[in-house]
Length: 133
Image 1 (cartoon, rainbow, N blue to C red):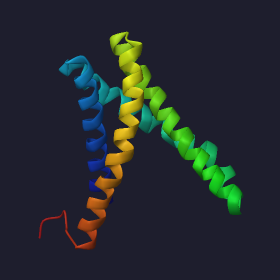
Image 2: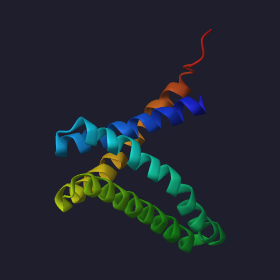
Image 3: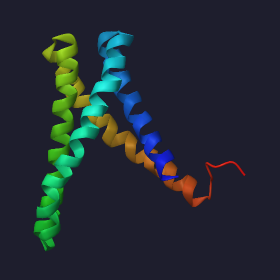
């Protein structure tokens, strides 16, 4: 079930990236490029980001721990925005398109991914199985 959920998260993330790139460029090819390159870069870089923050967050206690955890999420969002900007900027040469992607793509993910996860949590809570019976 965990693999199916993770796969569903990847597909949702890719769909968001494609929709934004296609909306700005009108190009299926550039939308496809965004679908492949942007999520792959995020997936490759996120573990390094998490490891860099993990020691400090886990070693801290009380209010400092909450502060560091918040800063980690802000840093993660900034990394995500930079990657979104670079992918669309390098694909189109447009700072405006790159900037809009950097703003919209993370916002869409922040809004839509918790909804996605809630749907999965509800499906698991109801005992929905993904394996044939």
